[in-house]
Image (cartoon, rainbow, N blue to C red; front, side, top):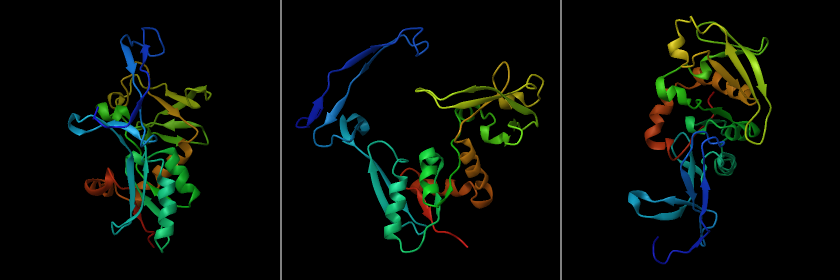
Length: 247
């Protein structure tokens, strides 16, 4: 730690994880250390580049308009999504014209962002985050399963129905969710592209999925996905792109 830094160190806490605990299969001990900066107590303590030690840091965010002029900025200890409402409010005070569309990359596909834009009557254009199965082997994403609200079933890419098989209520550790499964996966020719399960493909539906689905449905005709790729070099890590309403 650098000489002269102002730190208040808390006593390290050791936590031992054993097989059969709620962390299944974990056997190694884990040591948790906490540090708080005296000068920046709200900042997150982060590792600096090239192993230069630790320092208090914030996550900066900026909002840019279609001309790539920054119209709002904010910081948060760890989150880029948490400040979206603040950025939108700030931009309304800075930009004389009414802004009605917000173009973000998949990293901002978050319930808090959706709520912030709905509350301010801003049209959100944001692709869904890829699932872990998409990253591993290109399996069918949940968004490729069409939900039929009238019959309460999902339709898979092969045209089969996934029916509700269970319901888990919300708890301190998890959200409320409904589980859907298909009875025709065993002989399906698209099975290898859909699931690695030895039984069937399952889909989890959460209470917020209705709003998320509505957001996904307005994406294709409005903004090509190449728009997000072309914006990534200059802004995806640093600025969400704020777009004026179009006629």
